[in-house]
Image 1 (spheres, rainbow, N blue to C red):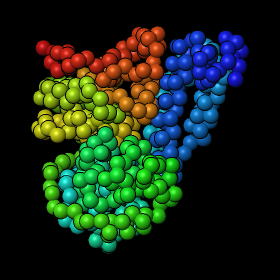
Image 2 (cartoon, rainbow, N blue to C red):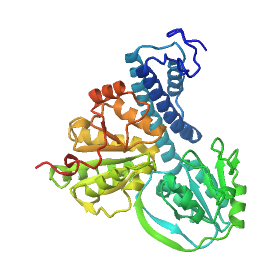
Image 3 (cartoon, rainbow, N blue to C red):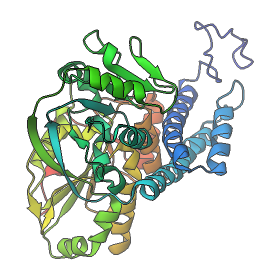
Image 4 (cartoon, one colour):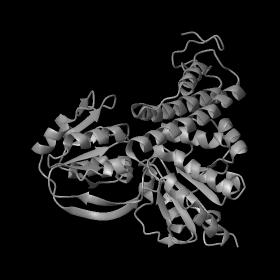
Length: 428
């Protein structure tokens, strides 16, 4: 392909092949941000559609935004930046649809105590994000003497009334996605990967790993639809699990739950009992530097509340944070898919105190890994939220000049080597 802008062949050595002249790294950076944001937004929309939720305006935007990245369409930085921010606004709508779909299908999440570990007998482990897949598996496996366990981002399933009513939804096993290679061999039954965040399996459990639809890995078994009879049969063939209780935890602090006690929170802030809020979460990874989030959460002042969601919560959830003003200090709001709820809580607090979100005593610190994190970050930018910290390293696809623009407009920060005093000390 020949580029009309720089008169070079798009062969990897001259101009790039993503729709803009490779001489302009800033335009290329914006296109990559937009493409990653669209991928994240499409993931959420993909989860919402089986729940009967879609929006023609969102679909039209996805088409327009993809067209904006075609060769020789847009060479103007400011207009492409506007498209990037619009992606964030559209993603808010997509996350709203997903939240509505989950609540309508499975009921409003509620605070729930979850058994973590395994129980005696055959078991199936479900990882990923798709609640519809889990619901179908629970229906199909009912009455067959098989326990079903959640893993990773499926933990919030236990807070939905229509899911937890199944007595064989027995508990939760393991931690975040990056621990699969050492956790899954310890689970003797079949494993069902419903979405992204599934690793290529070693031989130790490849024959027991099933995936759904587009999700597929070498060595595993891909299911084209939601007939889980093969998974259920495999569970009957595998060695049964033994009783091994690791802990119990409380989850299910959906935004409707938190907003239900908003008056109590507001009164506690006015009385000085609660002085700061932390939103710590995001998409976790395995590289070094992520202990920052653990250190920040455990160093947070006792007069604070910690909100969390996404698999980043596994960095901070294994700690007793106690209570403040009669409320738990640590509130697990759900999956990365539930980021809409955190936005609703922030907006409700800003309305209650008649100030902007940026004037709240709120610190947002996000772990950075994959495309859904990009979509959520763009949504926060679209709401003009400032002072967000991301890390542990700068995103490689953001050029220095574009990062400078984001710093200037939104006070975007990269996390430090350790939490600074300004984050963990309260103003006198």
